[in-house]
Amino acid sequence: MNQYDFKDRVAIITGGGQGIGFTVAQRLLASGAKVSIWDIDQPLLDKLPANLGVGDDRLLALNANISEEDSIGTAVAETIRKFGRIDVLINNAAIVGPNAATWEYPIKAFSDVVQVGLIGTFMVCRAVVPHMIAQNYGRVVNVSSVAGKEGNPKAPAYSSMKAAVLALTKSLGKELADYNIAVNAVTPAVAKTTLALSQDPAFLQMIVSKIPRGRMLELSEAASMICWLASEENSFTTAATFDLSGGRATY
Ligand SMILES: NC(=O)c1ccc[n+]([C@@H]2O[C@H](COP(=O)([O-])OP(=O)(O)OC[C@H]3O[C@@H](n4cnc5c(N)ncnc54)[C@H](O)[C@@H]3O)[C@@H](O)[C@H]2O)c1
Image 1 (tube, rainbow, N blue to C red):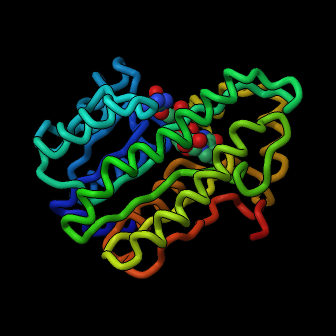
Image 2: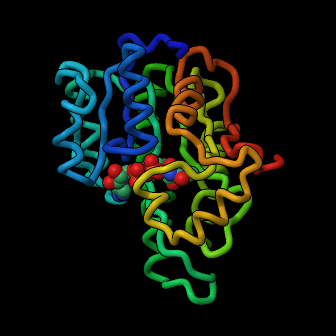
């Protein structure tokens, strides 16, 4: 496994209690970073020190809800109080919503998916980016989905939310291009996580069948690309989308 230099770098990972975010946390910690993990699942947060095998000098596990502005403000302040800076932001938390056709999709569920995945991601960027501007350094990685590029049937809320995250990435990346701040997005195909497995088995089978690689994405494969984008070595590329779809997306 390659190692990037994250010594003395401080990373926020939203939704890092499990799944892709947790795997990114493992890899960042193994590369020397200090991590502030935000999640709404307290039992998962309680288990993080043991699961990550790291002391509280390098780990802050915060119960923070990215769909609430006040909760984000508190989590940013606690991160700064403990670690003094924020170098990396992994916008990873999202919810997927039910599987239903657009004309049958519950309006409240659609709104919830957008509130967490899009508005939440926007509000976290809004709260964190000024700290990056002040130090003229930052790396933001937004975890979108191949659903945002291709549009999955029976996932209209999730697909449109993830497409909007790509556009947000492009806007913010261009706004910050004069600074040493990079903002990029990744578009994973399906990987075996709580979020993915909460969907209909027939739907899961359908999206796996669309992957030319013929299998799900491994969490370590997602973390590998995300960590490179979050590293200092990624000094030029910004406002871009990096594909993790195993050949499904053609652009
Ligand atoms: N797993 C996949 O197949 C897949 C594919 C493409 C993209 N993604 C994206 O990857 C990211 C991570 O997904 P995952 O599959 O690892 O999911 P996961 O369910 O394993 O983890 C997501 C975490 O986010 C937390 N969370 C949910 N709402 C939150 C909120 N409002 N505030 C803070 N934390 C919150 C959950 O408690 C959970 O621990 C998501 O953005 C997801 O859309 C996943």
